[in-house]
Image 1: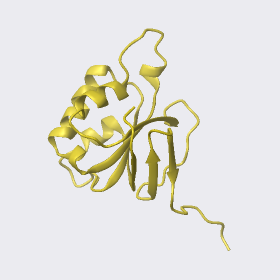
Image 2: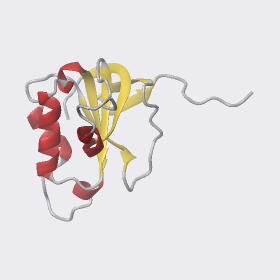
Image 3: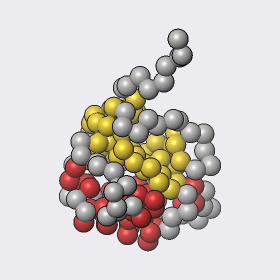
Image 4: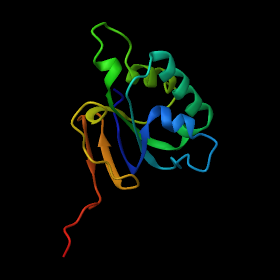
Length: 140
């Protein structure tokens, strides 16, 4: 996607729900974050609108990196069409933060638990991301 390394707090979720929460007290603070996004049934046009909205809101000025999860409708399509990550690369072409495609979370796929607010690192060149915080412990 876009090579580079970053470290930051994990903040994100479903792209459409994030866009709908813009301007409300529920919209997350993306300062110094690694944004993670996924979606179920977006069209390429919807992805472009959501990413453009986030760019206009200054979200991409604050993130350190982005991880794109499984996008069911686009990845499951039997026709070749533009993917969410292609649109993200286009909308953020004037930024240099790393972008990684990772199918470990999203809809209709095996999911990794993502601790919102937990620290993580990503290395897009090596195609890996790691959760750095201990987020689950055994009860003593």
